[in-house]
Length: 183
Image (cartoon, rainbow, N blue to C red; front, side):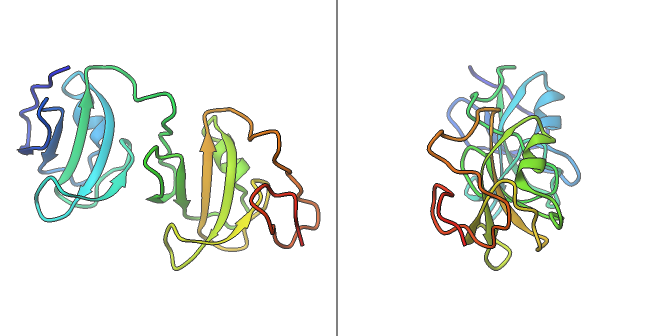
């Protein structure tokens, strides 16, 4: 599983050479970078100070707005099956597996629609606090947002656990984690 990445490598960040700090990444994604070298992408991160220290997680498909990005390539193997590759309107990735994301431009859209459009199921939805991953209040997957930014959690097509309620008619606010207590 050793990678021999040389193109635009500023620093090697892992013993196997598969995680590297890449220079000249403006408007390029790690998926493109790894793909150009015949490899798959298993991770992407914004770096802190021109080094291998992670500032925040990105998706493999995210086109970078900065020059330096940490990319992790794999020998053609797809990322672990529990991973989501959400990139449409993603403002910030809120979980290590990339399945919980802060989504922009969600006015009058539900997380069920958002995840469904990408071939995934929805397992959770939340109103965000201060334009970040902090939860203000829980929503249902079917709630059409009144605000621009919403946190959506998608699943690889699996329906939410059977103990979950999906009440959405005339719901003002969801008051419990399972969605069964509503206002």
